Length: 439
Image 1 (tube, rainbow, N blue to C red):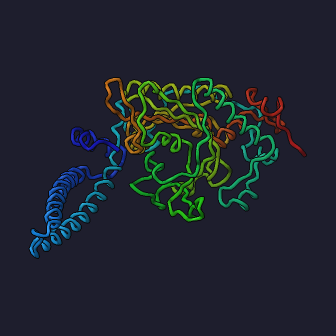
Image 2: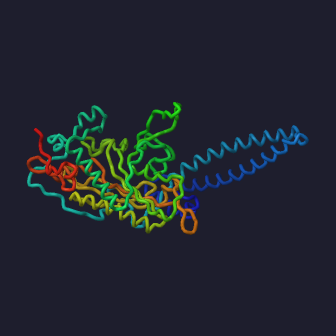
Image 3: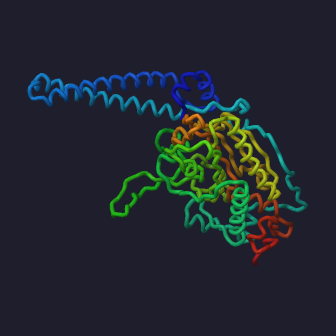
């Protein structure tokens, strides 16, 4: 969410940003609603002042007349009517405000969709096999690492079980990422994965002001909370699709001190995504699933684009290091305007080589939102002059499963059907060097 005065001052650039990001938002209407909203506030203040004066006069029996009583009732009715009008205008105003995009960085590619994302870096060469390589699902079945059939039986569509060495490889990936990030000064956190509505609105995971089950790829929890006294609390709760929303909300409605910045969190969590927008995509296997694990980086910096951009690049380098630690070929893409969500200033995806796809598959995403999220979550800091500013918020995937696991199984497979375990993960598997058939 942006400041309304900033919107007025940058209207032309914001219209261009909305067009390039394929976001439908009527900014001219928004400004008219803002004028109406301000006018209604003034009218309301004036009416309330008159109503208070009337109430004070009615307290004096000598001044209490039928005419004064009638005026009081009339003022009350006018206030009630104006409040309803004000609520309607405010609702319409907020619905447009939340759609106003961040103006992307000058170096963000202008493009219509993911086909126009720009490859900016590539590391490692895809492995050339001297045998017919298997897909990760063929390997997983022969080595008893994944059970899709029983996963679907128990968890439904896109359900799966990880088994045997795959479990320890996945946990090893998570621990390797956590250990590296802790060494780089990130504070480790296991955050809540069941959260309140403001958390997902504030971080931008709702397309609009409120949850929309037809658009938002989020699971909503249906039952109510039972409190300590036994009473029920009716409040919307949701499952997060990444640790990012919970970490960003850690300081919601708080004012930090400039000396605390930058703040660097690394969160480990289970993640849940409904994938309603991916109908017909990756319907087999575990490339696209409803439930997975992830280690996520989140940073808060001062309201300085150079500083937050520098932090953004540092976080991306960590993800690159993790891919290199595991000797997995990857590429870095800078995301174009048509493939970015409203709040993002700059965005990159990292993709690992997956032989069965004969291409790269996304294993992480890094975004700088500037103050778009912090305004929604009301996270500020007090600078050396005593002024309060909204922090800049940056996020980036460190390691996500099971896609990283897919890349490892396929890139490390051998002619005999076994899979070599990457050296950095062997300590998590009792220094085992290979996964071989158990038959």
